[in-house]
Amino acid sequence: MLDGIELTSGYDVGVDRLRADVRIVLPFSPEFGVFGGDEAQAGGLRWALLERVAQVRGVCACAHGLVGLVVCPGECTRLFDHGMMWVPVGEGAYPKPFLLAHTYGYGPEYRSELDGYARAWGLDVVVDGGGLAGDGWYSGSTTSVRVWAADQVNLWPLERDLALLLTAYPVRWPDEIVERIGREPLL
Image (cartoon, rainbow, N blue to C red; front, side, top):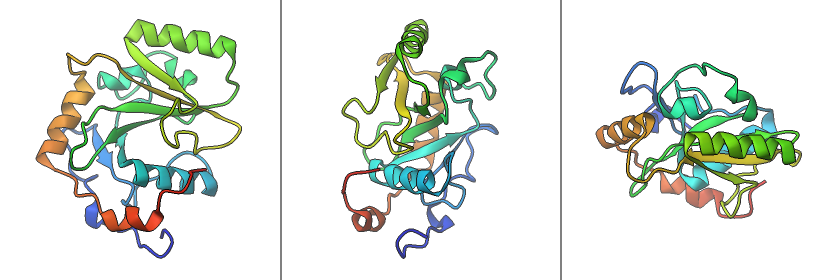
């Protein structure tokens, strides 16, 4: 329930799968959830509704997820505390997946390691929102880190799969929910 709006499975495309390991969970689905307590849940839900993004489940929360791996074969997920893969959805949205993490202990050593990781994979990184509305919704004591594939020419496997899935099962975004929430500053 969000301010008197019951979040039902009426818009849920989470049961529709392109393959057994990849699926989309919309913020108005009962399956939706982020890491953390009540404040993080409310902040994540509000951010996802306003930004019109859905969770991508079934892939690991690191660059290996962009190539479709379910489990990270290394230790790169340690760079991404509370990391989840997301994708823009709805009419006119280009389904370019991104990883959003909220990490503790951000500092020069972490940034150096993160930059090296991004270069090695050909990824773009934005830290602490970098002009992106509301990425820092998780907690005031964390730093938001958004990572996505910089390549605008070639589709990464997850990007291709999500484009197919969202073409086959287009999402109708319930504007009445977004209008009800409003556009006040996020957490």
